[in-house]
Length: 91
Image (cartoon, rainbow, N blue to C red; front, top):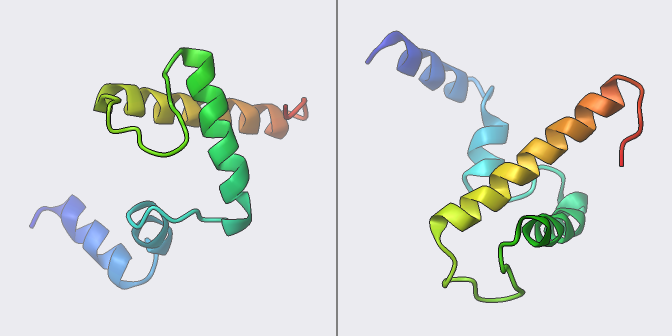
């Protein structure tokens, strides 16, 4: 096992990666109260970038389309957090 994998394994065994292992891998929201807002945000982002995301089944979308929605969500969340940290608006 290389040094990176050893560090990751040690961190997980010490509980340092609880967020990653419990939230991201299970599909659970880190802050359950934000689930509805994140869902709404996902549909807003999909509409902005032209991905035809709909309620219910979306198996007709490509992994690229789904990844684009998720990636754009992350980009917008980071931008909002940066503005908030800089003391600006957090729209």
